[in-house]
Structure formats: structure tokens, C-alpha cells
Length: 175
Image 1 (tube, rainbow, N blue to C red):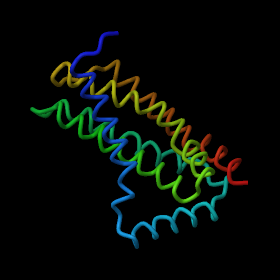
Image 2 (cartoon, one colour):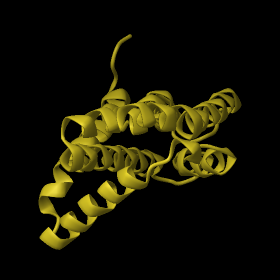
Image 3 (tube, rainbow, N blue to C red):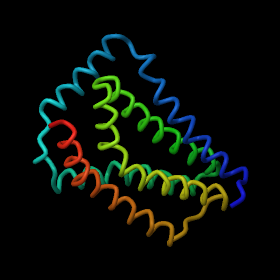
């Protein structure tokens, strides 16, 4: 596979977003940082692996479906390239920030918890976001029904992973 300019733009957007998210906690006000750490520690103390279920599944569908819908909606914009890249950047930044906060709150076990909470489903969904954005940028807009179907399956798979697999993995880590 030969990299072209649009592939580089998509990859760069995601990498810069991830790095921005990782560095973001350094720029938080001390009280905001302390509040976030306290919130994460409260979450871990109150975590119950029985919290998996259909409501978590539907919440995850919204969480993973919205960025995909935004990327698809970018196809209708005159500057589809920039809008799609912005969505990728923001999604990667949120992932980097969340994982960094888990590591800062819990150290080594936070790294394992971040992998359990964010790893599997993002391995499923982030490539779909990237491919969809690339297609929209490459074709200068437009929507591909086949890619849309793949995206829908990926959203469902990522949501099932978050709702049912991640809590079980997290329970094993925090026991």
C-alpha cells in the first residue's frame, strides 16, 4: 500500500490528537486535576462488575455512533476534509486524555485499567473512523453504503465490547 497525502493527513490528525490528549492533563488547573483524580478513584471504589447491561450498550452506541455520524455528515460540507480531520483529532484527543488520567490516578494498574476500559473497543472503532474520514476526503464528499454498513457493525461491536467485555476485564484488574 502506497501512502498518499490524504492518508498522511488522517494519520497525522489522529496522532496529534492522541498526543494532545496525553499532554492535556499538564495544563489543567490544580483543583480541576485533583477533582478528576478523585472522581476516578471514586469510580474505581464504587465499580461493580454487575453494572454491565443493555443501558451501557445503548450508551456506548451513542458514544461511538456520534463521531461516525459526524464524519459522515462532513461529506455534505464544502470543506469535508477539514471537518472530518477535526472529528478524528477530537476523538483521538479524548482517548489520550482518558487513558492518561487513568494512569495518573492509579499508576500501573491504571494502565491496565485504561487498556481494559478503552483498548479493545477503540481497536475496533478507530480504524473505521479513519477509513471513513479517508474515504470522504479522497472522494471529496459522498457516502459509500458498503462503508456505512461496516461502520454500523463496528459501532455495535465496539459497544458490545464496552458494555460486556470491558467491565469483566476491569473487574479482574481491580479485584
